[in-house]
Image (cartoon, rainbow, N blue to C red):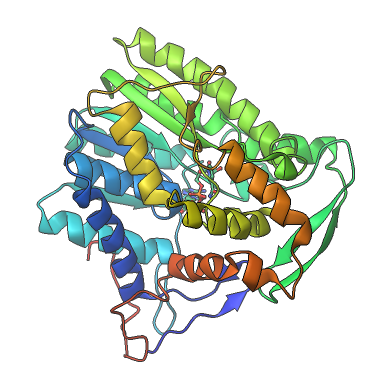
Length: 396
Ligand code: NAD
């Protein structure tokens, strides 16, 4: 079939298998181009491995350090006449590339929040890898069925305690408008913490530790975002920010667990705002990213997910380096985004943006390009008028 983008709001209903493979290959090429990451991880588990920061982590571990990787994700496989989600095609492409280099890769498609998935992965590690020395926790999900109560919790992106109104960008219509969001209820705050907080990360680490599968010196890392003050009411001080506070607290407990386990440690890495399936759903963020991209590209400091994670591995976690932590104990690979000159320019451009000048004074074109790339569209060298078979299996 011929597959074209079908965008609805902040999602694209279609994904292109060849384009997703080209996108994965671009990321592999970047990591290879940067050279080997010395003393890198050997056996890696990535939870949330099929798109965004998790996929970049899996690619960096495998192609930067020759690591054997297990990936967990929740993607829709293809059906006759209907394409799979992008994360499925990304993972299939990752498997093909890994297999071409005789690099071990095994993936599990299903609900990472469930006890069943944890038990399945524990058994697979026992069978295939023995022990894990890096666990990357990179889930972003709108819902979680709690494994103990069976209750389904839904996360919301809302401010806390106050009504919020701000400029936002309707990416579908290319329109800048005002968004009004009511504060979250106590229940919504709790639900968001249950979905996006640290409980599940801790459950994964306890399951691995309980089965004796954490190697001495095992490391774990989860991803966080802080960003500029313009986004704080909806992000850092909002429901998702509350979940991140919970994630950091879990990180400290996991750090204790790993230190007790022969000197390992856990880290929170604060990453840059980038176009991913998760971030495009957050009000205000697409407008901020469009402004940020323009400034960082002009300065030559722009990075995508793969550049960010390659830098995390090569300058903090491995390569004979040690993690450089801020005064709150966090790794900051958002350092270039948060440079004062960059943020000052964001503040200057922000109030000037209108639907009319959006393309002139921001990099909305770059935003749209990256958004389509998430689904395998707009990759150079891919002929989108060619018939393509959507029935791609995960192992190639
Ligand atoms: P993403 O949407 O690209 O990836 C989410 C991953 O989670 C996918 O692999 C998906 O399949 C998987 N997933 C979702 N629900 C699942 C479930 N129930 N079971 C198994 N897998 C499931 O998201 P992302 O933007 O890469 O976010 C990853 C982490 O990075 C999040 O913690 C996010 O807060 C953080 N982060 C993102 C940004 C950003 O700008 N995108 C910035 C800083 C930090």
